[in-house]
Image (cartoon, rainbow, N blue to C red; front, side):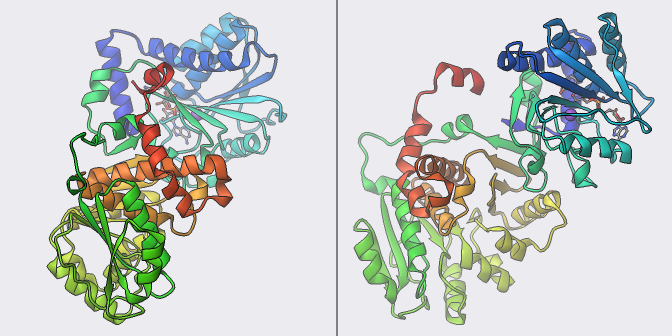
Length: 512
Ligand SMILES: NC(=O)C1=CN([C@@H]2O[C@H](COP(=O)(O)OP(=O)(O)OC[C@H]3O[C@@H](n4cnc5c(N)ncnc54)[C@H](O)[C@@H]3O)[C@@H](O)[C@H]2O)[C@H](O)CC1
Ligand SMILES: [K+]
């Protein structure tokens, strides 16, 4: 699914209105009706107190139109107009008149008013600001937002949490609605998925308001949300008359004294994701444990016992993952530099591989094009430098990717795979996956997919999705706290099965 900017959404709006020959208030009516249907199907007429806070733009107009539908269906409604400007939109005014025609008189809130009481059992509809927010709310509006947040009522936001800009950080975090649920029109917004702005969105859902599908299909976007349909289209089915040679020979390079487990996890993940053969190259101290733990794995060793001092692979691997648990001793750095000189296939570089690159910038030039780097936040910072917020982080990552022709996987609650000017936002995974070795598993999965012929970018996007899915399946039986990286590996097979399971008719409808 594409993630559009606010400017693109306004364009889609205009295009739809022209093409479908409808008026803007008809589009607003569609939007309000969709929200009403969503609420009505859940509330089924329950006499809960619904307090609607509506701004004076089109987001407020949606709220006012929604209030009319709720009233017409017998709901218990109080409408508050947050009167933050004289510049009321045409469709807001039209809907205000329609509401007044039904003898509903909103209460106007301005700077000097006391705010209405909100009890924890109320439902608040937040329609104060939408994607039109272009400056920080006035302080009294900010205080109203604080008042709503302090109420512990369920807060349903229309389109986007009020006070949250769609393309930058809010200037006062306490002046943003903390939404219980966001109903976003047609497309999700990027801010739902970034660590610093996603905190305002507990849950979200997209409502189809019938924006023109050809416009949406043809418009190029910088960000994509990666769900099952996107990943399924990348899947490379196993052939009936195939043999292990077809699925590649992966090499996993890493480990040091006390950190051989990292290589074990990576190798296991690489095998489980479907690499035909896997060889690990580790210091001598890793030999026994790896041979005992993974009978399917072949092991090469460095002469040195504790850390890697030579990285020689006596054959041409199909894919290679390097860095986990490797350490950054001088000899290892030297060996890594010499190894990079020899390599021409794209690599997957993780952990100490990235740390070495950050220490020895000149080595970055030797990294083969189309390599995948999988940094955690600290490692990313070493590569691209400090950032002031998530938006700058993404921009700097894109520039780095462009400059070095590499793919970067920014790991997080919504891992974002960046290649040049595009970002692919993952939708699977859970907080239980913030656990030791989780990243090693991801490196093994991406390497194993590349060995099977997936392009570097597809391997990264597909691997991140499947990794999250395996973690979700693992957590469904272990819970978040007890999920271990090996539990993610154990569920890679089930993640494939889940991905390939024919969708139910309801899911089919949702995905189309
Ligand atoms: N295609 C769709 O998704 C549709 C969306 N709809 C809804 O329309 C809003 C966007 O409406 P808009 O009138 O452009 O903006 P807002 O309501 O968000 O903002 C109101 C208005 O206020 C001005 N403004 C901005 N910031 C401030 C501020 N801090 N203080 C005071 N005033 C401010 C600004 O000029 C805005 O014009 C979208 O989110 C949807 O909810 C349509 O209803 C259907 C189609
Ligand atoms: K809103």
